[in-house]
Image 1: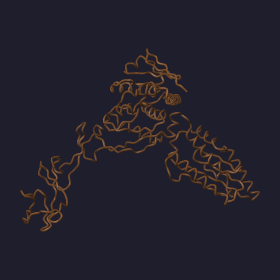
Image 2: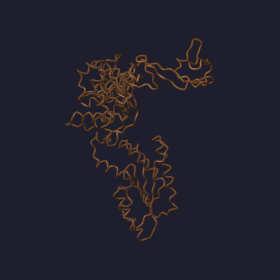
Image 3: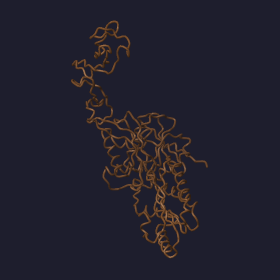
Image 4: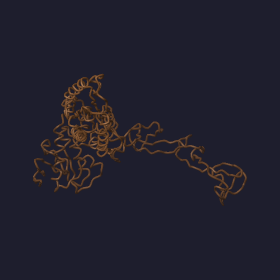
Length: 458
């Protein structure tokens, strides 16, 4: 299918399949447009500073519906990674039609947001972080950047904080992680200045007596014959090395002598010492630190959790639960009724039936959104159903807990559970890049001694 692109030369807009994109070369052009009626932007300028201004003006807009709009950069121009990170990537303007699906996906998710109307600045800032991750379906991953005083920059989020507020940025991530709205993966550990939070620290060896950096290292020489040990400078003579104790020449290392260690001498106070002290000098504010005075901070990537997605969309747990209970072959309430009937039938007929619990133990699945979980559940059901008999019943409490009721089944007929476990593990390893066993299957014979609630995981 061909994508129809219409150009408006007066306002430099592209209209494509119902979406309107503004081609912009300078931030001043944004003032003449009604941004709330746009669906995205294409930056078309070779100037890095102009591009930064445009991105900043859009991304920090008080209207989050505008701030989250797609921003592309014309592929004709090349920009540093710390500029491109805040956009949705480069595009060829004449091939913009191939990006419609991306634009539509972002716009759809922006429209799904339940943006809080009355909130504190901090709460709204937290919401922006979650909303950006949701609309891009993106793990917020930092990049190294010399322009940031901590040496790292985060997409979109870094634009919301000034350089002297960087610790507030990291605290925002910590708070969202503690509340389980984001999950955290460690990328790096950094040490920053206690005065200005800069990460540009010059580590220097110093004299432990006067703190001078004017020190020199000398090899220690051990003379085998007389066992004399002293700095190498004490052995030096015009034609080589000579022991100051026994006056013998040292010709061959390993035969006449060795160098067991190093000693330092200070050119300022003449102090000699075995171990130098280490200090850190902040390049930005010239504060000198003992190493234990530096502030250690974690740098990581952050993924939106299911709880975080619910926070963005303001979905209640009740709604999520009712949805998850209908994705199985049978609903949980109906399954309970049938299980109760089966317990009564066993009491009357003394037959043999089994109850099976299938538990998916991969914690990474918690990070998936509900649509993906539903699709995964369908795949799990298809695998399980392929090993069930006509009388067998399947229900799902959630995406990771599934129940089977196997009427009139002998224990030697449970071999198929091994096949189910193998194929479910293969499904997860193929899609989650993990090879460890993630599927736990437990079965128990249905007896009249157990009550209904003793079978089900509540």
